[in-house]
Image (cartoon, rainbow, N blue to C red; front, side, top):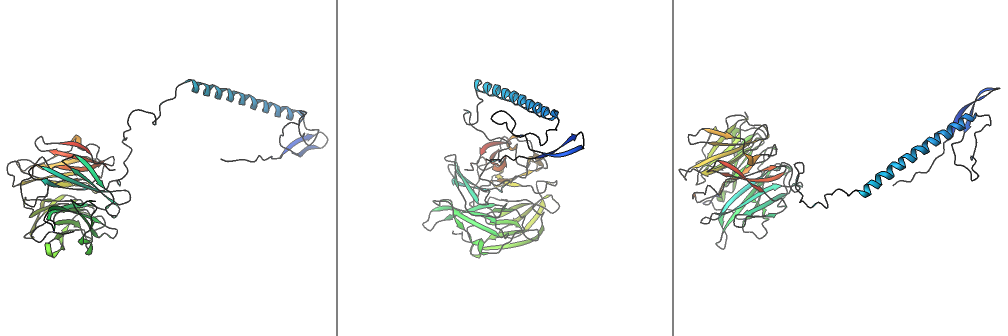
Length: 439
């Protein structure tokens, strides 16, 4: 794939066995005697027993006892047969209950049934581009991992409202974090196109790239040039990206930036900023011109911090983020920005997190720049505890104002299904849009 120039960022049978046994009988002259006794046998054709006891001196009471026992067994067998006959007769007279095969109502998944095609608590990544600035049409792509660790791509076109899927892009490490971004480019024949950049971690914890063109016929793409490098992440690192920057946690548990710099290609920039092991992170643009970036990270004290970096000057600053309290370990966060309602040149930042109860919490700043948060939105009810979350921020290298109603969509899992929700900035509420198809 082409990258932008430095100037453009971007059955069983049983054999019967007869057992002999010993019986103690009394001989009036000699006392007790132990004799071998054959097992009980069927009668001869004349009705006599096949074989008597070994001695004629055995007491008659034993033979009477045998017949009593056999008689009782016969009575029990007759009773059982009668009960079974009555049961089956009643069943034939009563109509059978409906089964799942002949029930006319459509089947619906239960809360315990998880979908196939997606790994449990798979990482999610999503990105969006305007198709036509004047019409407001846009295209969304959501990436996730299946049970075989293969990465899946679902694309939504606002012009049709439908989803299409490209299966099995490439294989990643089980439970790999995912990050996706992209940039506008001009093809060799002069056509405008978007190149999508997907980043993931392999079995050796190396950062890998898979890219494709938005206009590609099959959409499957190919491996990217970052694979030629040896950028390593901590085994539990998160990933986040907004072109041309990738954020990760290095093996030393510090924040690291990887940037694409035109003819310079990919370069890594380690920092001394320690972040929590397995802590979440989310990169968003802090300005319309994409020069300033904000990386939300969980610091080593478990609180959220903002790490702001300027792509031009390489200067960075840190400050307390939208959250001033600790957030749970192994949680996810997702940030997105929208143009300020009063000044389209200013971007307002919003953040999602998940609390100890598994509720999704929405964080923002009001007009007085005071921190606010809510966790009672119906749209987020039922979210899986430990779900990955990802949100959309429209990429716009030209710096033109972004339609506030276009972009603010986020994705998470509930019962294993990928849910799509949208923020209504005017009403200050979230609404459920539905599921992202997995098949």
